Image (cartoon, rainbow over all chains, first blue to last red; front, side):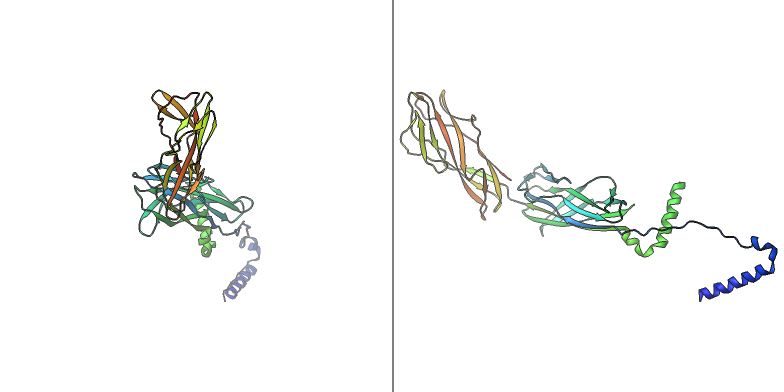
Length: 170
Length: 170
């Protein structure tokens, strides 16, 4: 329907032009402008490895256990390290358009729970730092560490909780 | 400011052009953070490491008690009465099934004394060692042996001393 109406208009314009022969060049102007769009691959992020603090021994005073993005575990305050076998920073694989840059947003704070008690996990850190870059291969792996806050005489048990990492093209 | 408005325009264009795909400009990955709070490790001394009666001579010698409590002598030292001879005994308590490292005294650290006289105790060994594994009940006995250095015509007397054993989750 639209098309038909347009061609009718075109005809009318043509008729007008035919009527005023001498001014034909001035009543229609064509200019060429650039337009463009690039369809790119959607960005995606997949978890490869969970953040594993492994064993922590609580003390009479509060303390922390830090897992660095490089996988180094340290403790402060009343908390001390138990067995670290299997401990690891989290790792995520980001995929998308080759060479695209992207922003990474880590959580401020999440809770881990043993079903009854909780601990706070915060001060998330990542490697590499700076803006993400998908590189020629269209993928980048990000390591994420954080700090586990252990209360004085924190109750025993296995604590678990989820956290989100958001990546956005920029 | 000018740059910003240009960007805003470009963004607006993108939004119009790819309205349906806006959500794929960013992606969220979910990881899990895990930690285990465990029972602190402890070590409690039981039976003392006892070399029993030792007879010196004009030549230096040694008396050893192994982790099983078996006593032997070498050089100028010979064995006297065996009453009380024992390996040192300790009880380790902590997290069920956890492994731990055992640190015994280095050579040159421990001496036993009787008034102004002393003898060195070196060559500490343990069973288990150098690592142990707590049972499902969270406990394990630890036995410690060592070697006593007996001097030439070592002065008679009852010699006593202390030594330290350190256990740590590994």
